[in-house]
Image (cartoon, rainbow, N blue to C red):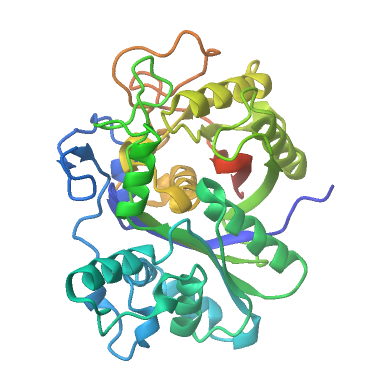
Amino acid sequence: MEPCKVFIHAFDGVCALGEGREYLTSALLSEKKPSNDYVIDSFTPNKPIFLGRIFPEIQEETLPKNLPIQFLTKINALLYRNFQLIKPQWQTITQSIPKNRIAVILGSSNAGIESGENAIEAFEKNATLPENYRYQQQEYGNPAQFMAWLLEAQGPAYIISTACSSSAKAFISGARLLQQNLCDVVLVGGADVLSQLTAGGFLALDAIDGGRCQPFSAQRKGIHLGEASALFIMTRQPSELCLKGWGEASDAHHMAAPHPEGLGAESCMRKALTRAELSPSDIDYLNLHGTATLQNDAMEAIAVDKIFKYSKTQMSSTKPLTGHTLGAAGAIEALFCCLTLMQNKSSECDEASRLPIHWMSGKTDDSLPQMNFVTADSNTTQSLNVAMTNSFGFGGSNACLIFTKEK
């Protein structure tokens, strides 16, 4: 199988850890243990929970003044804020590209659902919907249509919504468009914002830890929610970063729970390695899905052990730093892989070969297969050219991406 020829030309993101490549690189690779100092109950009355919120807060007022009202949503404000970070590169790359050859493929699990929540709340109080509410604001395709409007892109523009694997699958969909010559440039990524629906839903499932999540820990109690956006410019033109491989699989085991043996997770990792023509020992860093829920961590540990048991690949979950950002998780963790690979390009960052630490309190769960976690004592590597990231969603919707630093 020929290696894929899909390259990353620019990328950046916004999340609870911060925003902007230089700041995010420093925070991601820091040896300072994250605090547990932001617990609120605005989404879950009378039950305070830790949330990975973005600061400064996302403001719809920052959107363009000529914005069509159907695009007036919090998630679009977040995407707009994120896009400003890569706008100069976008303008340079697309200046000679026909508009109908530019695509926008994003992942999201909630899209503009908070607009619907606010409208319902207003209707219950006043028996009328807000003047600035339009039903289109909560449609899943809205964020992609907004970005297409903003960029004047006339190629394919759509959202992929497969829960926690949404934006990882957006990469795969975008890569296929490029390989099939259906477009020349793709803006890929994902975004999700915090909402009452998701907080209440996961709370009802008893899947939320009241504090910062602790993936693969014996003390793990569930996720903590976050919000984020990450955007990437992909083309067929060579650059320093390549989307070298990807894999997808579906468990079809249960509507919410993963297959207990991680069959789909194992399958998509093997497919990604095969497409990239790499072996497990070639992977320098693995970003785990690592949600800190009992079943998901257990199945991922089993699947990872089947593939990486005899390799020296170092791995960590970065969700303690951001929270579980749901449909944006695949994109924000792909961003972390790219930042890790390209860290020596940052002039203000002296972490020449560091890896993101796997943060947790207490000890690891001894009932799980042993994993080679990155610790404060083992967070450096002499070889850092290949990074893999896992994304596993509800219903067994699994995706895996492999990025390589080109020489």
